[in-house]
Image (cartoon, rainbow, N blue to C red; front, side, top):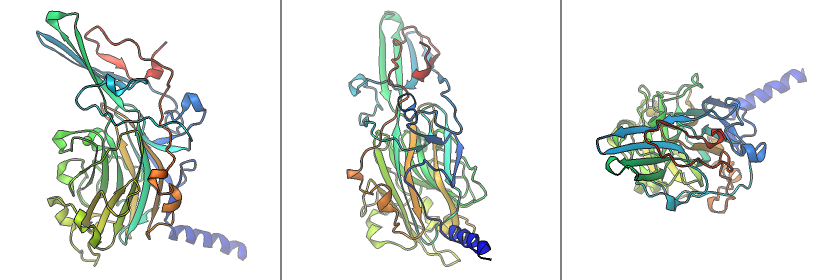
Length: 409
Ligand SMILES: [Ca+2]
């Protein structure tokens, strides 16, 4: 009889305990990868160091070709091309509007397996979900560490027809599009993947809330000009969207795709937290969710903290998740989405935890939670030994290989 009882106890414990921690992603039990998301490691060191090849989904680099944008008038020939940023270039080489000068390379020191939501290639979209539902309505906390690297660069070539030997070139390094921490209500939808490019993989997902980490400026969507964090939802019945109509509070500027690791802590409190009221932000779209609902669930507080900050949230808002999400038994699916478009970058999740009864015991063990003393994780590049060919001299040239590792030598 004893042999029958013991396995039953184990099962009950697992069901009751949804807290989890991934200090790294050597073991991906309990995770669902969708689309272009996969894991990446330092396996085989120099050749594949954090490359795109360590993956259940992607076996090798694909050759990246992206058509150049080409315009021509009676006086000017102009071409814009986007490619992976080569090594050895410094900020002094770039002067174009939009170039980010805060990117820093960090030295290779360790190589635990990380999640790569998108590789550094154009037009990718990926998602990662924890397969077990998390009880969110009575409060929860999730923390994660991320790093965005390998930004693409865009170069503009202009040739004056009347002075044919002169070619003017201006380049900017600036990747896109960003990623999001997403909570959605459908536990039968572990294959969920939203739309790519400016939608960052979460636009199009119904019954969802997204905290977006947006690195690409889309003026037609109401974006802030630089990297920013913003919270979006269209409620339980409509598809989420990365535009202004679903924005629940003002976006906050924060440097995200600067090559450094960043730590994010997301906390939902089942009540109004009075000390965060000075930081509250709201748009008209949020009003539908600042109310108690018929089940007696009260308005709570959602707060986002960056880089080890504990008392001052980057974003905070009064919100009732039981109104915003339609949940089965109060549990939601939690994870990440990301996408690239005509510009690209690697979106990596380095570690991740969630717990249903914060403060999480895991929080102090996962990253030390002390951002400033944390040993930086390495930056990753395809292949440091490859040089780009000479700059294009003939206009027009409609396409250019974007990935140096596939330029034939
Ligand atoms: Ca954007």
